Length: 286
Ligand code: AMP
Image 1 (cartoon, rainbow, N blue to C red):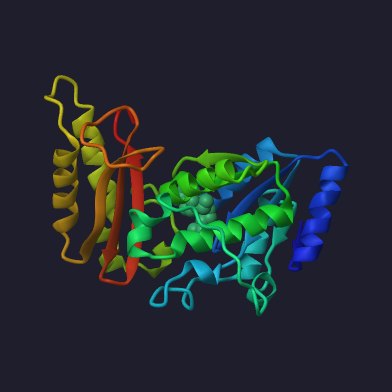
Image 2 (cartoon, protein in one colour; image 1 turned 180 degrees about the vertical axis):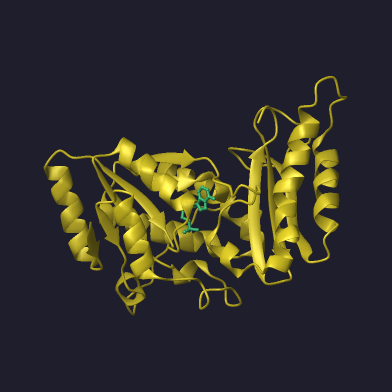
């Protein structure tokens, strides 16, 4: 596996793959790899001839009081894991080469970007779409893999690709969980063991909601009742502060009132006002 830090070099190498008739798969990440990231890489490995993984803690998607400075980072560790997973190139540029002084452009997907996580993290998705657009130009991928854990990011990127005609196929990968049910996340490293029961209340809420919606013979419940059931489970932990608990359409992210096949339960919860966790699940049949 090759480590590339220069944007010019990654673009040259990616174009060379294309010129040789090879398909390129991209997996954008911010590093501190866990099994969720590695599963995305394995999917790209299956679908494309060459796999490029980007590792870039993108400063423009962090708000002023967020965890940019404390975000976990260990290039040697991630390099070894990517290599063991069969990645061809790990692209890990410095911030200054991605955003040299005078950088002044952005890609904005309006509407979708301002709801849910976008409303508590203003500008977050503009940072995501801007860096992903840059990464698409730098790595010219045939396909790119994103995790369904970041359901809104996936929806925003699909919309960007559709609106702006990027010739890239977007693949979603299901959420990878710990045995406990906790959705894997680089931010889980911030959790103290005493905070674990609170963190687990997200997946517990989801599990109970899915069980209730699909219970054979039970009277059907609506979105409001689902939100109440899940909120009660989360609010039982004093460490938890709910950012949102919503039931939305999985494509448009518009709020649902009735539960249908496309209804997605989405959650964002702050633990002790330090760690913001997200999780989601389709409600019917899952
Ligand atoms: P991040 O490094 O957190 O920006 O994540 C990089 C990619 O990995 C994104 O597409 C995430 O949605 C995806 N990802 C992160 N955690 C998980 C998980 N537990 N399961 C599936 N995909 C994930």
